[in-house]
Image (cartoon, rainbow, N blue to C red; front, side, top):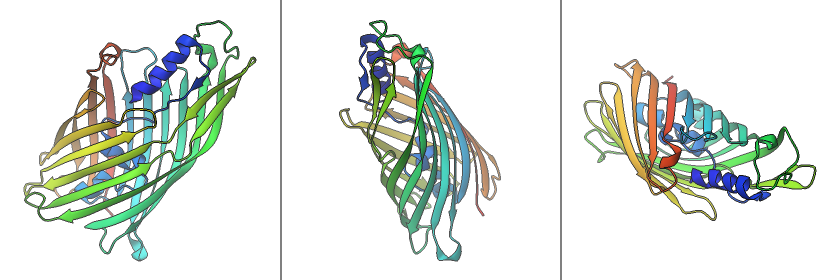
Length: 320
């Protein structure tokens, strides 16, 4: 689906159109590590897998690495869950920067969610909201149009807009999932609830970009084994108006020896693999430093010519 954004930009560069109707938010290969960015109501994957109520992390993603102006995404995030004073609240936020050719955006978000639960360690339903500001920018002097002078303004133009995301999320512990039980979880979110029509002024007219709402759905389960291993299949469904629904299916296996591997496929004809290490307190798992790498390859008619996708994640999680 990210191809839609690049394709729309390419059509603009080739044909001189002044409005882009399609838009795509940032994608992630290791999307379980970015649950709280995808859905402001979601529990961190470290909470369900290790009982950690705090986490900070960073990621860097290069999509279609062989393409000159390929999408690049940088992300910093943090989250914390508190159960003090009989309140189950999720706090957090993230800073994201995404650049595709001459267009890009940078957003800073805060996040707050409440968990309805009699015992948040085992089950809960959460409702969350994220709010922040996003700067959209375009380097007009880097545009190459069919007819010279279609957009005559040069340099960089930027506009800042408020943004809001909403989501719901539920999880429950079940004894029948694996030898030591496991968690079933799922949620629905609209990470960009505010649709925007962004207009950049030039000397001869207006250049506009339309930002549309996205709807995300996630479901998965974590099945524990008595030797500290677990397996986690998951699905990420992405819906954008006027675009095909994209379904991403993934499974990862965590070994007791602090190593995990994973693989998956999507209906956009992408295949991906991932692997990572846990470093830290392997005895009690009260804290972990995680380093992960994800690799994507497209088997569509457009993707292979653009090259592969690489993503690196690093995160530190802890239990208080």
